[in-house]
Length: 344
Figure 1 (cartoon, one colour):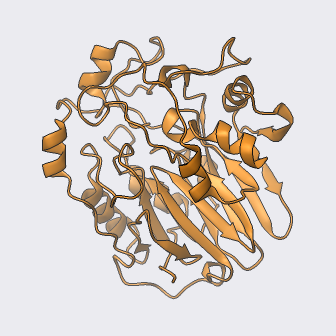
Figure 2 (figure 1 turned 60 degrees about the vertical axis):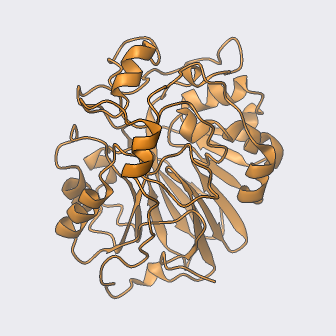
């Protein structure tokens, strides 16, 4: 979930009046639907936004493919195995992008749409428990049997939603999980982005399943945030996956991914966000901006920018901080190889 002005320590999602006026994390009001439409035309993907450096050995595409689900979501296929990260596909409307945000919006899943996109996942990695990351995960877990890896809060929310507890792996950061065949997942302790008041959106953690299943988006607290480094088989690339636009510099230092899926910030609360992150990651060969799109538009339409995100400024900062990195602005309908170049 992007930033807003919900004061830290206030009840989950706070008063609707606070959220509606501050969800952009800036002093400006939310754009109307018509204004947002005019101000944020569909984004044309730029698979090679800067000259490509010589590929590293780990960046060869091999049998690896990647598909962006919008927001921070990804599907990674390697040697016939599927890993999902933050798979939010139903993308229902909450009013967040048209100035009428409703914290009481009911959670829902479109089973046909989910089935169309997820295949037969072996793993589902969850960065945190806000709805634009978790809402479809209970259905995916129950219908596919995939193992879910996430925080304790994610565990309790999934159990309350009817997912088998034995199907969920609770992690904290620092774990390196070996799933065989060269597929490894390193869990990275991370941070959620903050607003202009340096506060988190919908903070809170759960130490037990809630008394009733989550019903609305206000029932899903952040529950701490993780990032993941997925190494896709012995000959495939390593991909750093973020679910929010902040990080622990000490936790990511030394990861050295081939691909870095970096969340675009909505504000400047994090000091020198882009330079510090790319330096800590040792300036990855490929940088992919994520979480910059309007995640209430269907995946059948071209990506439309979230009006609070300055994607162009972000790309410029990446070019300045890591001039040898190739920048790929992704598209929903493109399948990428392990080097993040489009494939047939």
